[in-house]
Image (cartoon, rainbow, N blue to C red; front, top):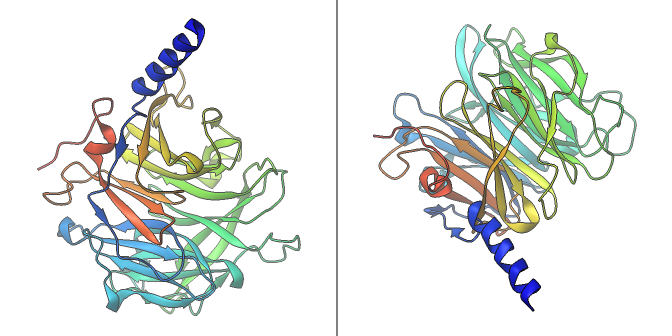
Length: 351
């Protein structure tokens, strides 16, 4: 009996130290999508951050990209319908089309094997009906698109890093494409790189890129988070495999909260436990690829797959930034960063 009591005390102490005892509630829950919410991204309105938009996928055969305001209200006139199982979505800024810097949202359309690309904030298609990827792959599921992350390097070159339902375990799971103007104001994609180990155990869906530090992260579900250089010229060596312990089920959504150009946090969804594990973005002084666990946060969002974090003072509600988690009730949950941070993590200065 004494041993049992001691074990309970130790477990309670561990959970308390990593912030697991409290369940964090969202400030807003978005309007429901039609079928199956999956992955969010945020378009920042640089002229007026309070008018920024949230883009979320409705992952269905007759799917859609939903557009919400910062209170989760759907912007009906901007919703893109008729997509064939759009899985993940990401956003990047300033792609030159006919000489005009254009913000874009890119989603993976699983069953057509295409990238679908839309200009922001108007959500108009700029892809000539879609761009096929993973061409000439013949394995079952090797062309069924899932994850997407966009990367813009210091030269202003913009890339899409794309994942699929399954693929080879020999280091070519992810394919990277350069996105450019095709000469008509639409986007073309040129394959520049194949990289990325895969355990072969489950699948790889969530991908996130840190533009400033030049890294790409992806969740090898059931194994951990893998880290590589995002710049093709820096090679295909795996830099780190972390978040390998303490997860209940699948490793899923990855998002990055940036305190500065070099410091911040990496959040990884523990889907089966409704928790997010928070790791150091910058690693340690001795090893920038050693990402230490700082905190585990339990949220109201259920079975969270995709997520997004933005460190920006958007408005009076989201003064320190915004954290978004998909929930399996066809919604996305919007959290204040300071509620996620608690006393253990830092925040940007807010207005």
